[in-house]
Length: 345
Image (tube, rainbow, N blue to C red; front, side, top):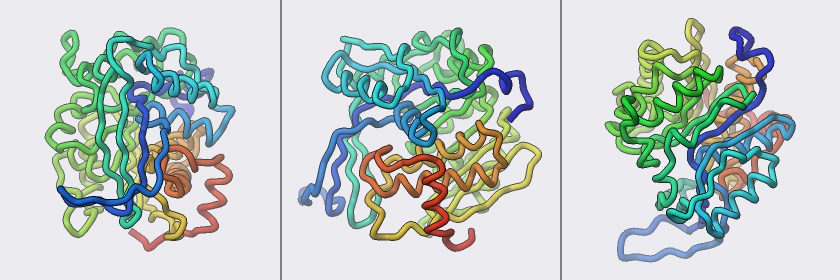
């Protein structure tokens, strides 16, 4: 990755946006309304795109410089998140502490039966995050990882002549010499499109899932039968045509795709993670993004980036929390070699 002025002295990542507390609960199954299920275990951990990618990156490579920009409440949950940032050596000088509302938290339910997760979130102080919190004047990191459109009320709204606060932040970051990546969330497709499409002219990278890429491009990528891989590929081409991205990557349960501007499409199946090792998918998408972006940052080929993305996501599946079972990139690669690839996609 040495094709721009940012490739020389700059190193590392700055994450911006969601830092929340995840109250993770492993349940037997997701119950019908007016019924009951047993909570098998629970824990308090970090969550949110800014938190997850920052910690995943530090676990992949403790020497990688990582900074963050976020807002937390002046409460026990806020202090917990500050301590987590300190624990992993994340620069949190731009983590604002506010007394205006409680810290953003999410109730995360992971089904033991299906491995799927359901989230219920309380935005709290996250609703107050705005472009004014973002200052890129002093950072020497290389890549901004920004999220989550659809979760932060002020950022989602128009901002000083821009379509939304996300656009304003991306423009700020690029003006400061950063490469930009955005993380989305699987909300209503029309809402994803409305928030993400104005960002496309200000992005260098996009690492998203099948639902999200379809929403941005107006493609039906998820059907009752599962992921429509060819529809995902059409959506990836659409995104490249309508923005300034260098590369787009898409993940789904059976595999992942990567496409660079002017490059060939890379297809890779997911790993054969042993069923008995899978605890939950909470954070697996963030782990995939962390693995992919780490490889991109280090100048790896797209196929190598995609392989580490699968390996990091596979490692993540072994725990109920978002970041708890991610390990060094070398260990993740060793796990991937041990597990082997699934069926071709």
